[in-house]
Image (cartoon, rainbow, N blue to C red; front, top):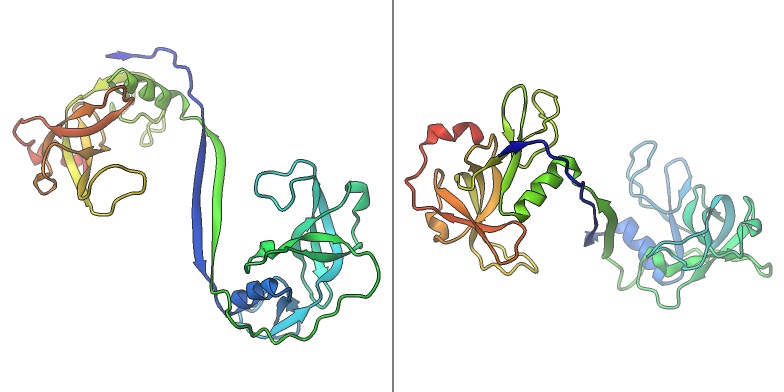
Length: 319
């Protein structure tokens, strides 16, 4: 099979999401524990500056800094930007301002949300104070947002030492990325061919190497690849690894083998799971073929063909 037929470029919404877990050093631990207790802490540098939020090393001198200083839960807006359309997970569901606030007693500004009725109500130099969350756990979200200071008694720090019982020692921050993925012309053709149980690569017009999956261009020669070439379906195991840890939401019993497989006619190996053979019998040079699940758009796994193993010299350049 060869050709350059037009291909509709695919697009699909994708979400990458995972919980990011990290431990805290003494400075960040004190800062977040303080928020839980409605105390805002900064850290004092060697030249007397107070940094909020605190860091463990001076950004100018790289000196380790540990002296904690309580600052007021009120301060002055240094700059701001209006957010007319809040996104999922942002501090407020209604329009708000992102503000940098220099808290009283601090020399740097803290980024957070300001609850204001509109952009006309926000200006640099305005006085604001912390609005605390009702349920606090030791996270930056313990500050729900800032709100305009309404006069009255000024908030004053109480000189907290930064020592707490039951200090927060770690946090779990959910990370999520929503985006639309397009594999491009070459890989769209590859994916569409898989749905017809064919594996299609593209040949470089200069070096004649067949890329599977195709990339749209030869990374060696730097030229576009447009000639489509069907490869396989059988191939040769070039290298492999034994998987001993069960993946979440993957219904495959461990141990199992994932391998690089050089399909016949391809100029590089792709990866796939090896089945139909005990994991400890998989080897370099094993000849395999794809196994398709009912209605599957790509091979579920590869199994031995029963052919003699390939000679090392036939695939050594593909390892």
